[in-house]
Length: 265
Image (tube, rainbow, N blue to C red):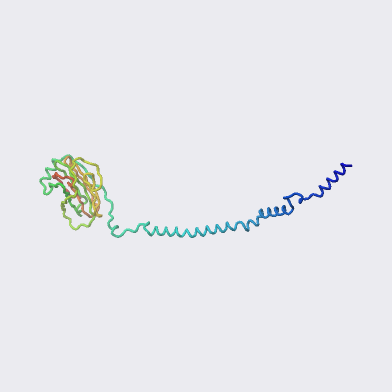
């Protein structure tokens, strides 16, 4: 009987229990938690609320990009205006352009005595090029010929030699000789050296300042006291050949030169 009474009393206590009997867990709290969970996982709510800041950020980025793009385009336009594209050539520069020239034919010969003996009897074929001087022989083209020829030799020492062609229209068809003094004060060196520009006959070519003048053979020291130097060149058109015999590098020695320049059909 006591056990039956204890069991019935326990059952009556269990039947009277509810969620409210346990602190911290209530029916109200569970409902609120459940509703919160549904709100957090509601896709319709997320689409209507959460993307709004993202859309604003994207629009702001587009506006910033649109504001920066014109600045870059403007800077590019300014670069083109500031000289990125070279200006067109003027009429004077175009007029100064000349066609390329074919290289001359050159040769050497050991018959020094024969050439010197022959040229000694011809007028103005044996001359002295003084120390520090440059002798330039101006030979204009003529309609009766198609090419120019030359040969030269010296006594005892070498001499600088080069040929240029001047496209300036001819006003005088006479062959003329011009002597000029060099401003170079270099010591004489009789050894042959490699060709280099910068206007040094010891090391190679002398540049011409006239834009109508082109180089056929660079001015360069030749061992003309050991061998004859000769050659020929076909007329490229109307103009004047400039044969340069250069003794500007010599401070002490004059050079005896034997030369002739003539036309050929």
